[in-house]
Image 1 (cartoon, rainbow, N blue to C red):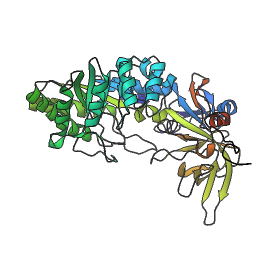
Image 2 (cartoon, rainbow, N blue to C red):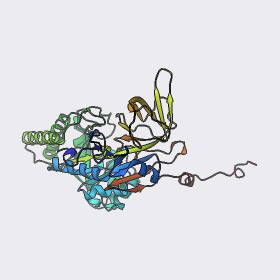
Image 3 (cartoon, one colour):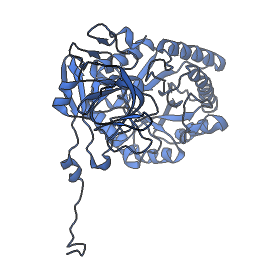
Length: 443
């Protein structure tokens, strides 16, 4: 099942469709030529909340969780909060039947503030601090993913009641675009099985399964099948050596998405088929009971539910024909994906030109979107919308140059509401402890 079967395709009021693989599924262009998301015009959002602004379509977000759950009925779903998190977003995930994974004390506090049941929270991260482990144990999180021998020892020092643990394992396989994994335990050489033994040696730690992350933008669903074969083999080894049956297999996320039309995106049903076949084969080979599969998905839920609105500040025509459109945002693209751009405040009245969209203080080589078509008459004051920014844009936004971070605005059913307010100059100065020339010897 795809989300396109749940929601209608984005449309233009005249009947023309926006690219449904790129924009939120409620996106449309109204009779005035304005981009609307969730039934709210971009111009209205800009007038009320300013620009730049991060928008998230609540209906789209919830629908994508529903698609994962429907297409993978034998698996549990955890929303990876590192992609996009606020109290409301965590609440949406829980309401839609997903757990929430967190990787910091702040993310944990946010999930708890949303009343996500602690038993449905996963703490992970490749360098968790003692304070984060303490907070997680105190909150009673459902699972802690351990990444190193020192982390096992540190966690064991905090717990005084049974704590379920997942061992992060590194399969000997590489998904398309997978980064080098610096933490976790390799499946080869007995490292992962040895980590399970370390956990078993701690009286309050309960090893219940393995956790893995194949990488980012994995386009080949077969990579999951290859990993499952290796993971089940290690689970069987643990059973044979220690008489302990690991019951959970968390396959992480990392599934490739379409940022522009034509990018590789394994369909969820196909992924489910690969997983079922690989599990059946591996479990039969090792006479091992089928573990409960878990997917931990962030980008696949949030990315296309979100867009970013910018105000055009300047249009620069360079010698040689290059056109640069400078906008009021400071954030560069948060990933290597291409992002579609649309004029959001008026009808397109002329042919398009290929432009590069840059932030207000972008350095050489940095860009928000490259070589994208926009109306050739784009001008200062126009609104531009950048698609596919729901994941890892709001979450990594910075206050570079002491410019406040943008707000996060939810849209649904013709209404908009601010989930995270804009960071103000007062907020920035509030963190500054000040300076006194007299105290420093100045006059």
